[in-house]
Each structure stands twice: as structure tokens, then as C-alpha cells.
Image (cartoon, rainbow, N blue to C red; front, top):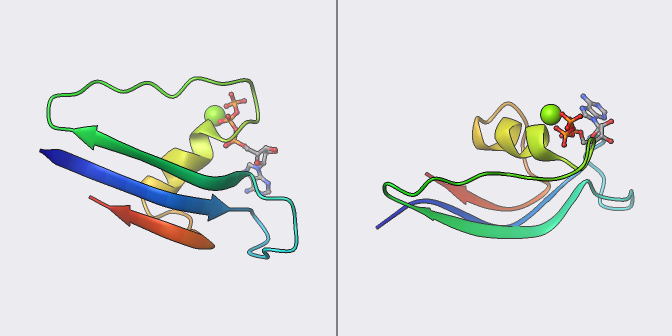
Amino acid sequence: MDILNVSNLTFNYNNNLENLPILKNLSFNVKSNELVSIVGGSGCGKSTIIKLLASIEKPIQGDIVI
Ligand SMILES: Nc1ncnc2c1ncn2[C@@H]1O[C@H](COP(=O)(O)OP(=O)(O)OP(=O)(O)O)[C@@H](O)[C@H]1O
Ligand SMILES: [Mg+2]
């Protein structure tokens, strides 16, 4: 069973699609009891994903269902 669905997530920090997004059309699912790591270079958007999942930031486009 999925406990998290992220679909077509697009985000930047000035809430403006004209600017280069930090995340573009990011989609992934997490199942119950699954362990997931987010791996990438500094500044690629890992903490931003967590802020979106925690509703600290709002997506420009896309959906997060927990
Ligand atoms: N509040 C903010 N306002 C504007 N830009 C921001 C803000 N927070 C982060 N950024 C920018 O967004 C991009 C992604 O940042 P983020 O903190 O998500 O990266 P990260 O993958 O967690 O990096 P690190 O591995 O260094 O923790 C970076 O270019 C960063 O400078
Ligand atoms: Mg970080």
C-alpha cells in the first residue's frame, strides 16, 4: 500500500513558473515499510522536497498525497 504519492511536483522559491525551477515534474511513491533515501549534490533540492512534504513550502504545480 502506498503511504505517499508525489506526482509532477514543480517548485521554485519565487513562486513563478517563468523562473528556472528547483524541482520539475518530480514523481515518486513510497510504500508502507519501505525505506527511501534522497541522494544528490549540495543544492539540488533534497531539503526542499522535505519542506514540501511537511507543507512548509507549497508546490507551484503537482500533488502530494500522504
Ligand atoms: N529559502 C530559500 N530561498 C531561496 N532559495 C533557496 C531557499 N532555500 C534553498 N534555496 C535554494 O534552493 C536550492 C535547493 O536547496 P536545498 O536546500 O533544497 O538543497 P539540498 O539538496 O538540501 O542541499 P544540501 O545538500 O546542501 O543540504 C539551492 O539552490 C538553494 O540555494
Ligand atoms: Mg539540505
